[in-house]
Length: 237
Image (cartoon, rainbow, N blue to C red; front, side, top):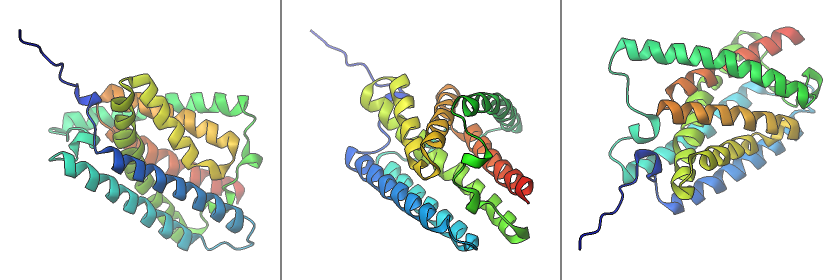
């Protein structure tokens, strides 16, 4: 008698081995601790050196991004396994831009609602010391935001979400676990913001799973970080 074994779908296949994933989680844990320690020290400094902080953060994000890509390439021929298929036409690009814009508006409204429920306002944020001042810092902030969009979406939605889905055999559970890791990585902003960022990560996870790629999420992530940092700085100065 012949028996057949179900072939895992693309969303259920592992992006890399378990040792690589465990190593990444440990790296992210150290990253979160260093970010918390830095925020607690630099945040009380009268004139923090933001340029150096921006450059160090960008370097750290790209190093972790590189670690993820190396792990994926050891198992798969192409990094499109975690990024999604490339755009093959301008129409596909425009479609993802439109989806990203719609998601930005809808998710922004949801975040405002949850921010009110969590009693988060401008006075409760713990990242004011990071907001840019002057042309150079504004330019570096945008570069940092683009880096965050590319690197963090690859790490949390492209890689970890896929790993968690494959491990649990459940898309909802995998999305929630990835969002929890995303929120925990931003714990230096305080517990309320950690919850809010986790909710944001949950929405990004649903978007990535629905679209089958993380490119719209990259766009929104970069837009949101750029916009919130620049607007926040202008409102305070």
